[in-house]
Length: 198
Image (cartoon, rainbow, N blue to C red):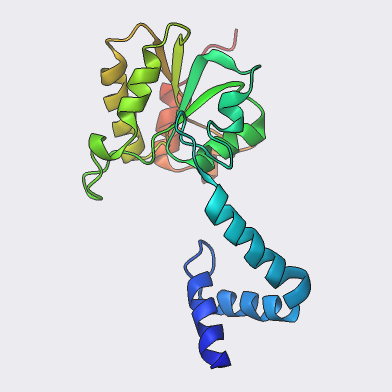
């Protein structure tokens, strides 16, 4: 009985990103050794999170409040909306502290191979938000993949009828990056996005 429960827990944990079957078994062993101080509080926190956290009805962020804390924050810049693929991208931008506007989570990118078309993404919500008087710029912060850039192109066309500036993130050489280690696509994007040094 105990072995099957351990196997079940390890199997569930192995579904998490970055955890394979062996890593999951090590995590289970660690949790069992720290049952009172880690396993039980973790189980309780996961149950509470599952019942209280949901997607924000405005931007799509995950939060225990609806609208989320970012949408409710009075000091955010209402004139800019940064469009991201998923909540992880929103969190990454928030960690950087570089953006102080509002967000919009699409829920993925357009992908014919994965069967994701415009109807599967939160595009209508974005178009509704772009119609608001205070919105002046939509920043498309999507990945530099084929699907990401296809989505950027599609959204740019959809937003053409709105009176907002549409911009996208620059792509190219990362800070501290060596040209010798960059792939061809990154180098091509860097050359196309070049700007004057003066």
